[in-house]
Length: 219
Image 1 (tube, rainbow, N blue to C red):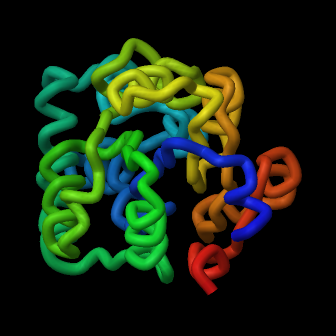
Image 2 (cartoon, helix red, strand yellow):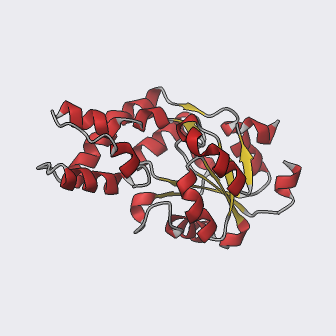
């Protein structure tokens, strides 16, 4: 933590799913399960094709590729409804998440969230754990033109927080997002999540910091 704080960051931006909360299991096969429920056989490489997409992009892809007579917005809404209960009742924080958020807040650092999740889910779990008031900015991937592999979302979050990009550090579990973080001129903390285990070796080497658990940051 001493090495981390010596850079005097003014703001910390957290990803939500897989970083602050243990929720990737809720999304792992949602698109595949949804297609199967509609008697549509998904392609074997479906998850690889949509892994870097926002929910809206994924819904657009599924609508077009499988010629489904539903609008992307309706498909997206059905996916959201499938997982919302878990955010409200069962999904837990990652170990050390609450303590780390409170630690940074006590240090006077501005806190934001940059997430590919959707508002109802994000807000519900933050409220459930009494963490909502710690974040002055929550930005969603679908509110900018490009997904998290580009810097758009991070630039927007820094702007809302009222800080320069160079003064921000981002906690993220999703390796492809590292390109967006670095393009925004921000430092990155790679956070391990089993959903990204295959990318962990290179993610941990290419990020500015890497932790197997947020608990490492708070002792």
